[in-house]
Length: 188
Length: 295
Image (cartoon, rainbow over all chains, first blue to last red):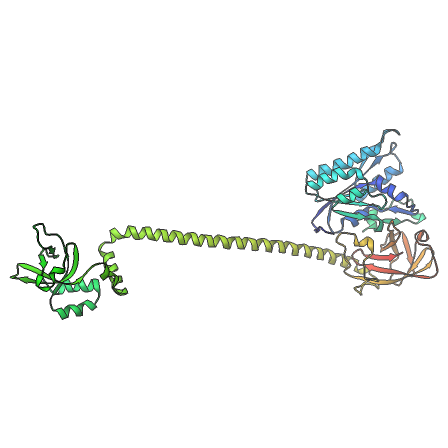
């Protein structure tokens, strides 16, 4: 890594859940689930993780919905989940989620809430906002899965995390598959 | 004219050497400045006592010109008319030939007699000199201040770097202490299997392998790993998306049970097809409190 790091660096994580899910879908992991808590801790390292945002679409029928349970699960572990409501099949929800991510990155940057914006997504759509906060003096880091990681995004970042080699997929035996464990304990 | 008065004055002005000379002469000496005579004729001088003195033409008085100052031997004729024989002309050449102590003495006398007139000139010169010295000193101090400021900044930067290193070391020491009880039998050797950190962990910012040790991991079945280092009852298991790194961390609530040093890992065969009885390279990573197994 070219740029020096400090344990006092304030890292804010912006997690594009849909993008990571899509990136891992093609790798057909059966019997695993993404341990986002572990992933966030690994990416932040010894630095101060001052905020962790997870962005996704909200299910139309939230009650008892697996996605809703998953979001709540993330909230319990410390993530701030921002879920945009769905509005029908013809509506492009991804654009609204992406806009939401860009808005939070910009707003927090201008309010000087972080030193490092760590975006977990391989989507090229975030290139303009990352370039902008970089000009603000913020360090920009991106994390993505190979094959789903836009080259321009990697070029624009101060540091790139390749998720492929980071062990953050939790092995879940069948008898534990439906358990709603507190992931805080996982990484404790 | 009292012989002691002018001799003392002369000695006071020109030093003690003049006394011997005067004694040789055996006459009254005085310093006289000859002015033009208003009545015409030879120039005339006036003693401090108010006596008019004319050049003694029988004893070199012709050498005296108007507005010249001489040390003269004064004699009288009938006690009413005084004549001065010139001995030493007090001109610029005379003063240039004076010795150091004589000059100092003259200056001292001049200062005592004419302090009010001289002091403003001295003060002006001294002020200029002191201003120049003060400016030089201030420039020197300013230069020193800049040097010290640069040194201070450098020290501050080094202090901050050292502080960061200490903080990092404290974090690592804390991690080591926290993980020490779970370290099993693989905590002593400060090396890992192939001398390199597993790829995934090498990417973790600030991750270091302060205390890592190679362990022996054997794969006995499709979904079972065995190692003498697996001493906990339960483990959490994580793999990397490229299926090359398996991380096993001992934890009481882990969902992978471990019995007799054997961990049952459902789905292991999907990550790495089982061949013959095989050895897998493993490493204990104190930083993360668990074992890395290369698949």
